[in-house]
Image (cartoon, rainbow over all chains, first blue to last red; front, top):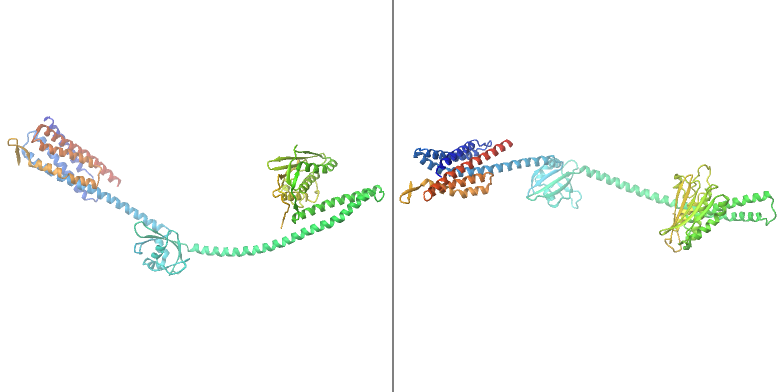
Amino acid sequence: MQAVVPIFDVISALAFLTALGIALDLPMSPGRAFELGTKLAIVASMAIYLFVGVSNSLEHAGATSALDRLEDYAEVLFVPFFMYAAVSSANAERVRREMGIQQELRVERDFSSSMMDATPAGIVLLGRDGKVVFGNGCARELLGSVIDDAFAGGPVFVERDGAFPEPRTLAEIAHDTSHAPRRFTVLGVEELRVLAITASPMAAEGVIVGMLDITSQVASERELEKYRRDLEVLVERRTEQLVEANLEMAAANNAKKAFLANMSHELRTPLNAVIGFSGILLAENAGPLNEEQHKQLGMIEDAGQHLLALVNEVLDIARVESGQVRVEAEKVDLGHLLTVVCSEFELAAREGSIKMSSELAEEPLWVVSDPAKLLQILRNLLSNAIKFTPPGGEIRVGLEREGDDCVIQVRDTGVGIAPYDQGRIFSAFYQACPPGEMKSKGAGLGLSIARQLSELIGAKVDLQSTPGYGSIFTLRVPLVIPSSEPRTFARGL
Amino acid sequence: MGHTAFGGQSVYSQTEVVNLLLGISIIPILLGTHAIVPSRHTSGYAAAYVFMLASYVSTVAEGYLLPDVFNFIEHGALAVAGCLFAVTLFLRRREQQRNLRES
Protein backbone atom coordinates (compact mmCIF):
# COMPACT_ATOMS: atom_id res chain seq x y z
CA MET A 1 0.00 0.00 0.00
CA GLN A 2 2.82 2.35 0.87
CA ALA A 3 4.36 1.69 -2.51
CA VAL A 4 1.45 3.51 -4.17
CA VAL A 5 1.80 6.64 -2.06
CA PRO A 6 4.68 8.10 -4.13
CA ILE A 7 2.59 7.60 -7.24
CA PHE A 8 -0.25 9.51 -5.57
CA ASP A 9 2.16 12.32 -4.79
CA VAL A 10 3.36 12.50 -8.37
CA ILE A 11 -0.24 12.48 -9.61
CA SER A 12 -1.08 15.14 -7.06
CA ALA A 13 1.83 17.32 -8.18
CA LEU A 14 0.91 16.94 -11.85
CA ALA A 15 -2.81 17.61 -11.19
CA PHE A 16 -2.13 20.77 -9.22
CA LEU A 17 0.41 21.83 -11.85
CA THR A 18 -2.28 21.47 -14.49
CA ALA A 19 -4.81 23.29 -12.29
CA LEU A 20 -2.32 26.08 -11.73
CA GLY A 21 -1.70 26.39 -15.44
CA ILE A 22 -5.42 26.61 -16.14
CA ALA A 23 -5.92 29.08 -13.28
CA LEU A 24 -3.22 31.31 -14.73
CA ASP A 25 -4.99 31.17 -18.08
CA LEU A 26 -8.44 32.03 -16.69
CA PRO A 27 -9.80 34.87 -18.85
CA MET A 28 -10.90 38.09 -17.21
CA SER A 29 -13.75 40.30 -18.33
CA PRO A 30 -12.54 43.74 -19.43
CA GLY A 31 -13.02 46.43 -16.82
CA ARG A 32 -13.58 44.01 -13.95
CA ALA A 33 -10.57 44.42 -11.73
CA PHE A 34 -12.16 42.51 -8.88
CA GLU A 35 -11.85 39.32 -10.93
CA LEU A 36 -8.09 39.63 -10.56
CA GLY A 37 -8.34 38.94 -6.81
CA THR A 38 -10.32 35.80 -7.44
CA LYS A 39 -7.86 34.63 -10.03
CA LEU A 40 -4.86 35.28 -7.78
CA ALA A 41 -6.49 33.41 -4.89
CA ILE A 42 -7.14 30.39 -7.10
CA VAL A 43 -3.61 30.54 -8.49
CA ALA A 44 -2.17 30.79 -4.97
CA SER A 45 -4.19 27.89 -3.61
CA MET A 46 -3.27 25.69 -6.57
CA ALA A 47 0.41 26.74 -6.28
CA ILE A 48 0.43 25.79 -2.60
CA TYR A 49 -0.64 22.28 -3.29
CA LEU A 50 1.64 22.05 -6.28
CA PHE A 51 4.39 22.80 -3.82
CA VAL A 52 2.98 20.20 -1.38
CA GLY A 53 2.87 17.57 -4.12
CA VAL A 54 6.40 18.35 -5.25
CA SER A 55 7.62 18.37 -1.63
CA ASN A 56 6.03 15.00 -0.94
CA SER A 57 7.56 13.54 -4.10
CA LEU A 58 10.98 14.85 -3.15
CA GLU A 59 10.53 13.48 0.33
CA HIS A 60 10.17 10.00 -1.10
CA ALA A 61 13.35 10.66 -3.04
CA GLY A 62 15.14 11.44 0.24
CA ALA A 63 15.11 15.25 0.17
CA THR A 64 15.75 17.38 3.27
CA SER A 65 13.19 17.96 5.95
CA ALA A 66 13.38 21.76 5.43
CA LEU A 67 10.89 21.44 2.57
CA ASP A 68 8.70 19.26 4.76
CA ARG A 69 8.41 22.00 7.40
CA LEU A 70 7.77 24.65 4.76
CA GLU A 71 5.11 22.36 3.35
CA ASP A 72 3.29 22.33 6.72
CA TYR A 73 3.11 26.13 6.81
CA ALA A 74 2.15 26.33 3.17
CA GLU A 75 -0.72 23.92 3.74
CA VAL A 76 -2.13 26.21 6.42
CA LEU A 77 -2.29 29.04 3.87
CA PHE A 78 -4.38 27.01 1.44
CA VAL A 79 -7.63 27.26 3.38
CA PRO A 80 -7.75 31.10 3.59
CA PHE A 81 -6.81 31.41 -0.08
CA PHE A 82 -9.42 28.90 -1.06
CA MET A 83 -12.05 30.63 1.03
CA TYR A 84 -11.19 33.99 -0.48
CA ALA A 85 -11.35 32.51 -3.97
CA ALA A 86 -14.76 30.95 -3.28
CA VAL A 87 -16.26 34.06 -1.71
CA SER A 88 -14.92 36.50 -4.30
CA SER A 89 -15.92 34.14 -7.10
CA ALA A 90 -19.47 34.10 -5.75
CA ASN A 91 -19.40 37.89 -5.53
CA ALA A 92 -18.13 38.12 -9.07
CA GLU A 93 -21.05 35.96 -10.18
CA ARG A 94 -23.48 38.17 -8.27
CA VAL A 95 -21.99 41.35 -9.72
CA ARG A 96 -22.06 39.82 -13.20
CA ARG A 97 -25.75 39.02 -12.84
CA GLU A 98 -26.57 42.45 -11.48
CA MET A 99 -24.72 44.10 -14.33
CA GLY A 100 -26.68 41.91 -16.75
CA ILE A 101 -29.93 42.97 -15.14
CA GLN A 102 -28.87 46.62 -15.27
CA GLN A 103 -28.03 46.25 -18.93
CA GLU A 104 -31.42 44.69 -19.60
CA LEU A 105 -33.08 47.52 -17.68
CA ARG A 106 -31.17 50.09 -19.72
CA VAL A 107 -32.28 48.44 -22.96
CA GLU A 108 -35.83 48.25 -21.73
CA ARG A 109 -35.80 51.89 -20.64
CA ASP A 110 -34.41 52.96 -24.02
CA PHE A 111 -37.09 50.93 -25.76
CA SER A 112 -39.87 52.39 -23.62
CA SER A 113 -38.55 55.90 -24.10
CA SER A 114 -38.30 55.47 -27.88
CA MET A 115 -41.74 53.95 -28.01
CA MET A 116 -43.21 56.77 -25.94
CA ASP A 117 -41.69 59.36 -28.26
CA ALA A 118 -42.74 57.49 -31.39
CA THR A 119 -46.36 57.05 -30.36
CA PRO A 120 -48.78 59.61 -31.85
CA ALA A 121 -50.60 59.95 -28.52
CA GLY A 122 -49.57 62.10 -25.61
CA ILE A 123 -48.53 60.08 -22.55
CA VAL A 124 -47.98 61.58 -19.13
CA LEU A 125 -46.99 59.83 -15.91
CA LEU A 126 -48.39 61.43 -12.78
CA GLY A 127 -46.74 60.65 -9.48
CA ARG A 128 -48.58 59.84 -6.28
CA ASP A 129 -48.56 63.52 -5.37
CA GLY A 130 -50.31 64.39 -8.62
CA LYS A 131 -47.27 66.02 -10.19
CA VAL A 132 -45.99 65.13 -13.63
CA VAL A 133 -43.05 62.74 -13.51
CA PHE A 134 -42.73 62.16 -17.24
CA GLY A 135 -44.31 63.45 -20.42
CA ASN A 136 -43.50 62.27 -23.91
CA GLY A 137 -42.85 64.48 -26.92
CA CYS A 138 -46.38 64.23 -28.22
CA ALA A 139 -47.82 65.35 -24.86
CA ARG A 140 -45.61 68.41 -25.00
CA GLU A 141 -46.77 69.18 -28.54
CA LEU A 142 -50.43 68.76 -27.63
CA LEU A 143 -50.23 71.07 -24.66
CA GLY A 144 -48.17 73.68 -26.53
CA SER A 145 -47.67 76.91 -24.68
CA VAL A 146 -49.46 75.72 -21.51
CA ILE A 147 -47.19 72.73 -21.07
CA ASP A 148 -45.46 74.19 -18.02
CA ASP A 149 -48.75 75.18 -16.35
CA ALA A 150 -50.21 71.77 -17.02
CA PHE A 151 -47.15 69.91 -15.76
CA ALA A 152 -46.99 72.16 -12.68
CA GLY A 153 -50.53 71.12 -11.78
CA GLY A 154 -52.30 74.20 -13.13
CA PRO A 155 -55.96 74.05 -14.27
CA VAL A 156 -55.82 74.29 -18.06
CA PHE A 157 -58.48 71.78 -19.14
CA VAL A 158 -62.24 72.23 -19.47
CA GLU A 159 -64.50 69.27 -20.03
CA ARG A 160 -66.46 69.72 -23.27
CA ASP A 161 -69.59 67.81 -22.40
CA GLY A 162 -69.46 68.41 -18.66
CA ALA A 163 -72.29 70.06 -16.78
CA PHE A 164 -69.89 72.37 -14.90
CA PRO A 165 -67.24 73.70 -17.26
CA GLU A 166 -64.70 74.63 -14.61
CA PRO A 167 -60.98 74.50 -15.38
CA ARG A 168 -59.44 71.22 -14.20
CA THR A 169 -55.91 70.06 -13.55
CA LEU A 170 -54.37 66.91 -14.94
CA ALA A 171 -54.41 65.33 -11.49
CA GLU A 172 -58.14 66.05 -11.05
CA ILE A 173 -58.89 64.62 -14.47
CA ALA A 174 -56.81 61.52 -13.73
CA HIS A 175 -58.66 61.07 -10.46
CA ASP A 176 -62.11 61.17 -12.10
CA THR A 177 -61.32 59.49 -15.41
CA SER A 178 -61.02 55.83 -16.22
CA HIS A 179 -60.23 53.90 -19.40
CA ALA A 180 -63.27 55.43 -21.12
CA PRO A 181 -62.00 58.61 -22.80
CA ARG A 182 -63.46 62.00 -21.90
CA ARG A 183 -63.16 65.12 -23.99
CA PHE A 184 -61.42 68.22 -22.78
CA THR A 185 -60.61 71.56 -24.35
CA VAL A 186 -57.16 72.99 -23.63
CA LEU A 187 -57.31 76.54 -22.27
CA GLY A 188 -54.73 79.16 -23.10
CA VAL A 189 -53.71 77.90 -26.54
CA GLU A 190 -54.38 80.02 -29.62
CA GLU A 191 -56.33 77.48 -31.66
CA LEU A 192 -59.15 75.28 -30.45
CA ARG A 193 -57.65 72.02 -29.27
CA VAL A 194 -59.79 69.13 -28.07
CA LEU A 195 -58.19 66.15 -26.38
CA ALA A 196 -59.61 62.75 -25.52
CA ILE A 197 -58.09 61.88 -22.17
CA THR A 198 -57.90 58.48 -20.47
CA ALA A 199 -56.29 57.54 -17.18
CA SER A 200 -54.92 54.22 -16.05
CA PRO A 201 -53.61 53.76 -12.51
CA MET A 202 -50.39 51.77 -12.30
CA ALA A 203 -49.98 48.80 -10.01
CA ALA A 204 -46.98 50.39 -8.28
CA GLU A 205 -47.60 54.09 -7.99
CA GLY A 206 -48.94 56.94 -10.05
CA VAL A 207 -51.29 57.19 -12.99
CA ILE A 208 -50.65 56.99 -16.73
CA VAL A 209 -52.64 59.68 -18.55
CA GLY A 210 -53.17 59.25 -22.28
CA MET A 211 -54.11 62.20 -24.51
CA LEU A 212 -55.25 62.09 -28.12
CA ASP A 213 -55.87 65.12 -30.32
CA ILE A 214 -59.44 64.83 -31.63
CA THR A 215 -59.90 68.44 -32.74
CA SER A 216 -60.41 67.50 -36.38
CA GLN A 217 -62.70 64.65 -35.37
CA VAL A 218 -64.83 67.02 -33.30
CA ALA A 219 -65.00 69.43 -36.23
CA SER A 220 -66.07 66.59 -38.50
CA GLU A 221 -68.68 65.46 -36.01
CA ARG A 222 -70.05 68.99 -35.81
CA GLU A 223 -70.24 69.17 -39.57
CA LEU A 224 -71.88 65.76 -39.74
CA GLU A 225 -74.40 66.84 -37.13
CA LYS A 226 -75.23 69.89 -39.24
CA TYR A 227 -75.68 67.69 -42.30
CA ARG A 228 -77.84 65.32 -40.30
CA ARG A 229 -80.10 68.14 -39.14
CA ASP A 230 -80.35 69.53 -42.67
CA LEU A 231 -81.13 66.07 -43.93
CA GLU A 232 -83.82 65.58 -41.31
CA VAL A 233 -85.44 68.89 -42.31
CA LEU A 234 -85.26 67.86 -45.96
CA VAL A 235 -86.72 64.43 -45.26
CA GLU A 236 -89.50 66.01 -43.23
CA ARG A 237 -90.31 68.41 -46.04
CA ARG A 238 -90.22 65.63 -48.63
CA THR A 239 -92.41 63.44 -46.43
CA GLU A 240 -94.99 66.18 -46.20
CA GLN A 241 -94.88 66.58 -49.97
CA LEU A 242 -95.21 62.83 -50.37
CA VAL A 243 -98.20 62.70 -48.05
CA GLU A 244 -99.85 65.51 -49.99
CA ALA A 245 -99.08 63.76 -53.27
CA ASN A 246 -100.46 60.51 -51.89
CA LEU A 247 -103.64 62.22 -50.78
CA GLU A 248 -104.02 63.78 -54.21
CA MET A 249 -103.32 60.45 -55.83
CA ALA A 250 -105.82 58.68 -53.60
CA ALA A 251 -108.44 61.29 -54.41
CA ALA A 252 -107.70 60.91 -58.12
CA ASN A 253 -107.81 57.14 -57.84
CA ASN A 254 -111.12 57.23 -56.02
CA ALA A 255 -112.50 59.60 -58.63
CA LYS A 256 -111.30 57.23 -61.35
CA LYS A 257 -112.90 54.25 -59.65
CA ALA A 258 -116.13 56.10 -59.10
CA PHE A 259 -116.10 57.20 -62.71
CA LEU A 260 -115.47 53.67 -63.96
CA ALA A 261 -118.13 52.17 -61.73
CA ASN A 262 -120.72 54.77 -62.64
CA MET A 263 -119.92 54.81 -66.29
CA SER A 264 -119.94 51.03 -66.50
CA HIS A 265 -123.31 50.94 -64.80
CA GLU A 266 -124.67 53.67 -67.03
CA LEU A 267 -123.34 51.90 -70.11
CA ARG A 268 -124.71 48.51 -69.16
CA THR A 269 -128.29 49.68 -68.91
CA PRO A 270 -128.64 50.86 -72.54
CA LEU A 271 -126.49 47.93 -73.68
CA ASN A 272 -128.95 45.49 -72.16
CA ALA A 273 -131.70 47.26 -74.07
CA VAL A 274 -129.72 47.02 -77.33
CA ILE A 275 -128.92 43.33 -76.80
CA GLY A 276 -132.46 42.52 -75.60
CA PHE A 277 -134.24 44.20 -78.45
CA SER A 278 -131.87 42.89 -81.08
CA GLY A 279 -132.56 39.41 -79.66
CA ILE A 280 -136.30 39.99 -79.94
CA LEU A 281 -135.90 41.16 -83.50
CA LEU A 282 -133.66 38.20 -84.33
CA ALA A 283 -136.29 35.87 -82.90
CA GLU A 284 -138.65 37.51 -85.41
CA ASN A 285 -141.17 38.20 -82.70
CA ALA A 286 -141.70 41.60 -84.27
CA GLY A 287 -142.10 40.21 -87.77
CA PRO A 288 -140.12 38.33 -90.38
CA LEU A 289 -136.63 39.50 -91.37
CA ASN A 290 -134.87 39.13 -94.64
CA GLU A 291 -131.38 37.66 -94.80
CA GLU A 292 -129.58 40.98 -94.83
CA GLN A 293 -131.57 42.28 -91.83
CA HIS A 294 -130.85 39.04 -89.95
CA LYS A 295 -127.14 39.35 -90.64
CA GLN A 296 -126.93 42.98 -89.54
CA LEU A 297 -128.96 42.39 -86.40
CA GLY A 298 -126.61 39.47 -85.57
CA MET A 299 -123.64 41.83 -85.86
CA ILE A 300 -125.42 44.32 -83.57
CA GLU A 301 -126.04 41.62 -80.98
CA ASP A 302 -122.42 40.30 -81.16
CA ALA A 303 -121.02 43.79 -80.77
CA GLY A 304 -123.41 44.44 -77.90
CA GLN A 305 -122.40 41.21 -76.15
CA HIS A 306 -118.73 42.07 -76.58
CA LEU A 307 -119.27 45.54 -75.22
CA LEU A 308 -121.33 44.18 -72.32
CA ALA A 309 -118.56 41.72 -71.40
CA LEU A 310 -116.08 44.55 -71.49
CA VAL A 311 -118.23 46.77 -69.34
CA ASN A 312 -118.82 43.91 -66.88
CA GLU A 313 -115.07 43.41 -66.53
CA VAL A 314 -114.47 47.10 -65.95
CA LEU A 315 -117.23 47.10 -63.40
CA ASP A 316 -115.77 44.06 -61.64
CA ILE A 317 -112.30 45.44 -61.31
CA ALA A 318 -113.62 48.80 -60.21
CA ARG A 319 -115.60 47.07 -57.48
CA VAL A 320 -112.64 45.02 -56.35
CA GLU A 321 -110.33 47.99 -56.23
CA SER A 322 -112.87 50.15 -54.44
CA GLY A 323 -113.31 47.47 -51.77
CA GLN A 324 -116.94 46.85 -52.48
CA VAL A 325 -116.59 43.11 -52.93
CA ARG A 326 -117.85 40.85 -50.15
CA VAL A 327 -116.57 37.34 -49.68
CA GLU A 328 -119.32 34.87 -48.88
CA ALA A 329 -117.74 31.62 -47.77
CA GLU A 330 -119.54 28.30 -47.94
CA LYS A 331 -118.81 24.65 -48.59
CA VAL A 332 -118.06 24.13 -52.28
CA ASP A 333 -117.38 20.99 -54.33
CA LEU A 334 -114.58 22.13 -56.61
CA GLY A 335 -115.09 19.20 -58.99
CA HIS A 336 -118.71 20.15 -59.55
CA LEU A 337 -117.73 23.78 -59.98
CA LEU A 338 -115.19 22.88 -62.65
CA THR A 339 -117.68 20.68 -64.48
CA VAL A 340 -120.13 23.57 -64.60
CA VAL A 341 -117.53 26.00 -65.92
CA CYS A 342 -116.21 23.54 -68.50
CA SER A 343 -119.73 22.92 -69.80
CA GLU A 344 -120.19 26.67 -70.21
CA PHE A 345 -117.17 26.85 -72.52
CA GLU A 346 -117.75 23.60 -74.40
CA LEU A 347 -119.65 25.36 -77.19
CA ALA A 348 -117.05 28.07 -77.59
CA ALA A 349 -114.29 25.45 -77.69
CA ARG A 350 -116.13 23.42 -80.30
CA GLU A 351 -116.69 26.52 -82.43
CA GLY A 352 -112.98 27.25 -82.24
CA SER A 353 -112.08 23.62 -83.09
CA ILE A 354 -110.38 23.27 -79.72
CA LYS A 355 -110.36 19.99 -77.89
CA MET A 356 -111.27 20.52 -74.24
CA SER A 357 -110.93 17.82 -71.57
CA SER A 358 -110.96 17.66 -67.80
CA GLU A 359 -109.10 15.40 -65.35
CA LEU A 360 -110.95 15.52 -62.09
CA ALA A 361 -110.43 13.58 -58.87
CA GLU A 362 -112.78 10.64 -58.41
CA GLU A 363 -114.03 11.82 -55.06
CA PRO A 364 -115.49 15.28 -54.48
CA LEU A 365 -113.00 17.85 -53.24
CA TRP A 366 -114.71 20.11 -50.74
CA VAL A 367 -113.38 23.48 -49.80
CA VAL A 368 -114.78 26.32 -47.77
CA SER A 369 -114.62 29.29 -50.09
CA ASP A 370 -116.66 31.78 -52.10
CA PRO A 371 -118.19 29.87 -55.05
CA ALA A 372 -119.11 33.02 -57.00
CA LYS A 373 -115.53 34.28 -56.89
CA LEU A 374 -114.18 30.85 -57.79
CA LEU A 375 -116.56 30.65 -60.76
CA GLN A 376 -115.47 34.03 -62.00
CA ILE A 377 -111.78 33.17 -61.65
CA LEU A 378 -112.21 29.89 -63.51
CA ARG A 379 -114.31 31.52 -66.23
CA ASN A 380 -111.63 34.15 -66.78
CA LEU A 381 -108.87 31.52 -66.94
CA LEU A 382 -110.80 29.33 -69.37
CA SER A 383 -111.91 32.30 -71.45
CA ASN A 384 -108.30 33.39 -71.70
CA ALA A 385 -107.21 29.87 -72.72
CA ILE A 386 -109.85 29.68 -75.48
CA LYS A 387 -108.95 33.15 -76.76
CA PHE A 388 -105.30 32.32 -77.23
CA THR A 389 -105.49 28.69 -78.36
CA PRO A 390 -105.57 28.32 -82.14
CA PRO A 391 -107.91 25.89 -83.92
CA GLY A 392 -106.77 22.29 -83.49
CA GLY A 393 -105.30 23.10 -80.07
CA GLU A 394 -106.16 21.52 -76.79
CA ILE A 395 -107.23 22.72 -73.35
CA ARG A 396 -106.99 20.42 -70.35
CA VAL A 397 -108.44 21.23 -66.97
CA GLY A 398 -107.16 19.30 -63.94
CA LEU A 399 -108.02 19.17 -60.26
CA GLU A 400 -106.12 17.45 -57.46
CA ARG A 401 -105.33 17.87 -53.82
CA GLU A 402 -101.86 18.84 -52.61
CA GLY A 403 -101.51 18.99 -48.84
CA ASP A 404 -103.81 21.68 -47.47
CA ASP A 405 -104.57 23.05 -50.94
CA CYS A 406 -106.65 22.05 -53.91
CA VAL A 407 -104.85 22.71 -57.16
CA ILE A 408 -106.69 23.53 -60.37
CA GLN A 409 -104.66 23.66 -63.55
CA VAL A 410 -105.74 25.06 -66.90
CA ARG A 411 -103.31 23.92 -69.60
CA ASP A 412 -103.52 25.08 -73.16
CA THR A 413 -101.48 24.54 -76.28
CA GLY A 414 -101.87 28.15 -77.29
CA VAL A 415 -99.39 30.76 -78.38
CA GLY A 416 -97.81 31.06 -74.95
CA ILE A 417 -96.61 34.17 -73.18
CA ALA A 418 -93.15 35.70 -73.57
CA PRO A 419 -91.03 35.84 -70.38
CA TYR A 420 -91.07 39.64 -70.54
CA ASP A 421 -94.89 39.64 -70.45
CA GLN A 422 -95.25 36.96 -67.78
CA GLY A 423 -94.49 39.41 -64.97
CA ARG A 424 -97.01 41.94 -66.24
CA ILE A 425 -99.79 39.76 -67.55
CA PHE A 426 -101.78 40.04 -64.29
CA SER A 427 -101.73 43.86 -64.35
CA ALA A 428 -104.98 45.64 -65.20
CA PHE A 429 -105.34 46.61 -68.87
CA TYR A 430 -102.04 44.96 -69.78
CA GLN A 431 -102.30 43.05 -73.00
CA ALA A 432 -99.54 40.78 -74.16
CA CYS A 433 -99.43 40.77 -77.92
CA PRO A 434 -99.07 37.15 -79.10
CA PRO A 435 -96.35 36.55 -81.70
CA GLY A 436 -97.62 37.14 -85.21
CA GLU A 437 -100.66 39.14 -84.09
CA MET A 438 -100.79 42.91 -84.45
CA LYS A 439 -103.64 43.39 -82.02
CA SER A 440 -104.37 41.59 -78.80
CA LYS A 441 -107.73 40.18 -77.82
CA GLY A 442 -109.88 41.52 -74.98
CA ALA A 443 -109.43 44.50 -72.67
CA GLY A 444 -106.61 43.06 -70.57
CA LEU A 445 -108.72 42.74 -67.45
CA GLY A 446 -109.58 39.03 -67.18
CA LEU A 447 -106.34 37.83 -65.62
CA SER A 448 -106.06 40.91 -63.43
CA ILE A 449 -109.55 40.25 -62.03
CA ALA A 450 -108.68 36.56 -61.54
CA ARG A 451 -105.53 37.45 -59.59
CA GLN A 452 -107.29 40.01 -57.38
CA LEU A 453 -110.27 37.81 -56.65
CA SER A 454 -108.02 34.86 -55.84
CA GLU A 455 -106.18 37.03 -53.33
CA LEU A 456 -109.50 37.99 -51.78
CA ILE A 457 -110.37 34.35 -51.10
CA GLY A 458 -106.85 33.37 -50.00
CA ALA A 459 -106.06 31.53 -53.23
CA LYS A 460 -103.15 32.06 -55.54
CA VAL A 461 -102.80 32.15 -59.33
CA ASP A 462 -99.49 31.30 -60.98
CA LEU A 463 -98.36 31.09 -64.55
CA GLN A 464 -95.91 28.89 -66.40
CA SER A 465 -95.61 29.44 -70.10
CA THR A 466 -93.37 28.67 -73.04
CA PRO A 467 -93.93 30.82 -76.10
CA GLY A 468 -95.13 28.67 -79.00
CA TYR A 469 -96.01 25.70 -76.78
CA GLY A 470 -98.74 26.95 -74.50
CA SER A 471 -99.39 28.05 -70.96
CA ILE A 472 -100.33 26.53 -67.62
CA PHE A 473 -102.37 28.63 -65.18
CA THR A 474 -102.43 27.15 -61.69
CA LEU A 475 -105.04 28.15 -59.13
CA ARG A 476 -104.16 27.00 -55.61
CA VAL A 477 -107.24 27.13 -53.37
CA PRO A 478 -106.90 26.55 -49.61
CA LEU A 479 -109.19 23.90 -48.10
CA VAL A 480 -110.58 26.55 -45.79
CA ILE A 481 -110.64 30.22 -46.64
CA PRO A 482 -108.35 32.05 -44.17
CA SER A 483 -111.30 33.80 -42.54
CA SER A 484 -114.60 32.16 -43.34
CA GLU A 485 -116.67 35.00 -41.91
CA PRO A 486 -118.52 36.98 -44.58
CA ARG A 487 -116.64 40.23 -44.91
CA THR A 488 -115.68 43.11 -47.11
CA PHE A 489 -112.13 43.34 -48.36
CA ALA A 490 -110.78 46.83 -48.69
CA ARG A 491 -108.13 47.14 -51.33
CA GLY A 492 -106.09 49.94 -52.77
CA LEU A 493 -105.90 53.39 -51.31
CA MET B 1 5.99 21.69 17.75
CA GLY B 2 4.92 18.04 17.97
CA HIS B 3 2.81 16.45 20.69
CA THR B 4 3.48 13.01 22.16
CA ALA B 5 1.34 9.93 22.61
CA PHE B 6 1.76 6.21 22.79
CA GLY B 7 4.88 6.40 24.92
CA GLY B 8 6.36 9.76 23.89
CA GLN B 9 6.26 9.37 20.05
CA SER B 10 5.25 12.57 18.21
CA VAL B 11 1.97 11.77 16.39
CA TYR B 12 0.98 15.06 14.72
CA SER B 13 2.25 18.56 14.15
CA GLN B 14 0.43 21.71 15.22
CA THR B 15 0.08 22.94 11.63
CA GLU B 16 -1.80 19.78 10.65
CA VAL B 17 -4.34 20.32 13.41
CA VAL B 18 -4.63 24.03 12.62
CA ASN B 19 -5.15 23.20 8.98
CA LEU B 20 -7.90 20.72 9.81
CA LEU B 21 -9.67 23.17 12.13
CA LEU B 22 -9.41 25.95 9.56
CA GLY B 23 -10.70 23.66 6.85
CA ILE B 24 -13.72 22.69 8.95
CA SER B 25 -14.41 26.21 10.20
CA ILE B 26 -14.87 27.76 6.75
CA ILE B 27 -17.46 25.19 5.71
CA PRO B 28 -20.40 27.35 6.96
CA ILE B 29 -18.96 30.34 5.09
CA LEU B 30 -18.67 28.35 1.89
CA LEU B 31 -22.20 26.92 2.29
CA GLY B 32 -23.62 30.40 2.97
CA THR B 33 -21.91 31.85 -0.08
CA HIS B 34 -23.24 29.07 -2.23
CA ALA B 35 -26.76 29.63 -0.85
CA ILE B 36 -26.66 33.33 -1.78
CA VAL B 37 -25.12 32.98 -5.23
CA PRO B 38 -25.44 29.47 -6.62
CA SER B 39 -22.76 28.67 -9.17
CA ARG B 40 -22.55 25.92 -11.77
CA HIS B 41 -19.01 24.97 -10.70
CA THR B 42 -19.72 24.78 -6.99
CA SER B 43 -20.21 21.02 -7.06
CA GLY B 44 -16.74 20.47 -8.60
CA TYR B 45 -15.02 22.73 -6.06
CA ALA B 46 -17.08 21.22 -3.24
CA ALA B 47 -16.08 17.67 -4.19
CA ALA B 48 -12.44 18.66 -4.42
CA TYR B 49 -12.67 20.42 -1.08
CA VAL B 50 -14.24 17.33 0.53
CA PHE B 51 -11.24 15.29 -0.60
CA MET B 52 -8.92 17.98 0.76
CA LEU B 53 -10.67 17.70 4.14
CA ALA B 54 -10.40 13.93 3.96
CA SER B 55 -6.70 14.37 3.41
CA TYR B 56 -6.48 16.70 6.47
CA VAL B 57 -8.41 14.28 8.67
CA SER B 58 -6.24 11.37 7.51
CA THR B 59 -3.10 13.36 8.25
CA VAL B 60 -4.13 13.84 11.85
CA ALA B 61 -5.61 10.35 12.22
CA GLU B 62 -2.54 8.52 10.99
CA GLY B 63 -0.73 9.57 14.17
CA TYR B 64 -3.21 7.55 16.28
CA LEU B 65 -4.20 4.44 14.39
CA LEU B 66 -3.64 2.57 11.17
CA PRO B 67 -0.83 4.82 10.04
CA ASP B 68 -0.35 3.05 6.73
CA VAL B 69 -3.98 3.14 5.81
CA PHE B 70 -4.52 6.81 6.72
CA ASN B 71 -1.28 7.79 5.03
CA PHE B 72 -2.55 6.09 1.91
CA ILE B 73 -5.86 7.88 2.20
CA GLU B 74 -4.15 11.22 2.84
CA HIS B 75 -2.05 11.10 -0.32
CA GLY B 76 -4.74 9.46 -2.42
CA ALA B 77 -7.37 12.05 -1.42
CA LEU B 78 -4.94 14.82 -2.25
CA ALA B 79 -4.35 13.35 -5.73
CA VAL B 80 -8.10 13.07 -6.35
CA ALA B 81 -8.64 16.63 -5.08
CA GLY B 82 -5.93 17.87 -7.45
CA CYS B 83 -7.57 16.13 -10.41
CA LEU B 84 -11.01 17.53 -9.46
CA PHE B 85 -9.61 21.07 -9.17
CA ALA B 86 -7.95 20.71 -12.59
CA VAL B 87 -11.15 19.50 -14.27
CA THR B 88 -13.36 22.11 -12.57
CA LEU B 89 -10.99 24.94 -13.48
CA PHE B 90 -10.82 23.67 -17.05
CA LEU B 91 -14.62 23.78 -17.34
CA ARG B 92 -14.75 27.20 -15.75
CA ARG B 93 -12.14 28.59 -18.11
CA ARG B 94 -14.02 27.25 -21.12
CA GLU B 95 -17.27 28.87 -20.00
CA GLN B 96 -15.61 32.20 -19.25
CA GLN B 97 -14.01 32.20 -22.68
CA ARG B 98 -17.38 31.51 -24.28
CA ASN B 99 -19.06 34.27 -22.24
CA LEU B 100 -16.39 36.72 -23.28
CA ARG B 101 -16.80 35.81 -26.95
CA GLU B 102 -20.57 36.21 -26.73
CA SER B 103 -20.38 39.56 -24.97
